[in-house]
Amino acid sequence: MSQLKNVEARILQCLQNNFLARYVSLPNQNKIWTVTVSPELRDRTPLVMVHGFGGGVGLWILNMDSLSARRTLHTFDLLGFGRSSRPAFPRDPEGAEDEFVTSIETWRETMGIPSMILLGHSLGGFLATSYSIKYPERVKHLILVDPWGFPLRPTDPNEIRAPPTWVKAVASVLGRSNPLAVLRVAGPWGPGLVQRFRPDFKRKFADFFEDDTISEYIYHCNAQNPSGETAFKTMMESFGWARRPMLERIHLIRKDVPITMIYGANTWIDTSTGKKVKLQRPDSYVRDMEIEGASHHVYADQPHIFNAVVEEICDSVD
Image (cartoon, rainbow, N blue to C red; front, side, top):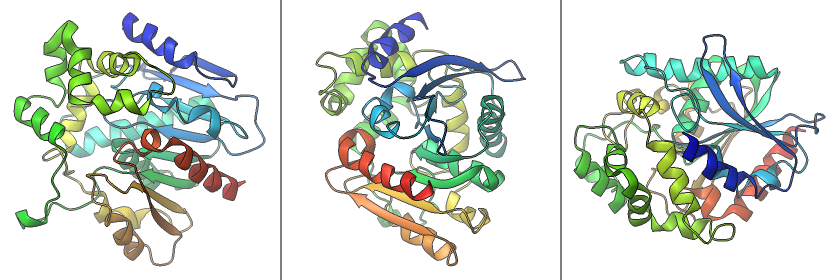
């Protein structure tokens, strides 16, 4: 954990705006690692960003300053990921999902945030949606960035979009074990393995880091007890599919909660989901858009466009 702390400190040093990084203790003794940027800007609804599978607060470094220019931004490591506590999750999909969602709500209460603009990427998008079903009064606008776990698994194999080669490679190495077990087995070679499977991460963050800071960060986020990862595995059928797909439930979000879905034009996630969400919510605001030149990690592939889009959404709130 101390190595993760050190590499994350190197990342957060890049922030220009005021920030506060600390553990937020929940009543059940779990701790959520939280970074708040521009805490002094209290006049507008804060933006809360939820990272995806295997990520952490550090991966938002290309977005934090821009998105906190006019409002407070909160980002945290999901329970079971990054520097947050790593408890044992329930072993059933609904129980695991509820545990994540309850931890987000307890974190919000402890932080004293009355309402928020809620943004989630990938697994974070799935959880932000689940949160909005349960606590709609807390969400002023739901922003889903390349969200995981929406489509129902097609019965026709020809309809399945191929995940990228690295996903298939990792999946074939792992078979039944947890998705990132190969990184933990690799030990000190782990950062090199991240670099080999995902050389694109180094490119994405090259403006800030010429070295392997980001690969090291991803490695150290995932080199510990795999609690959130095990929960994710419980929630999924195979890498691309959720056992409890969100398209079957998105109509349960209160009608007055506006939703914007942002996809990378080159993502492996099914982008037709946006249109399907519109059909499920005919009387609600649903906007879907694709960002050219971006794949699954939209926020890092095209940070300037992504930041401008999110800022515009935030400005529409207040």
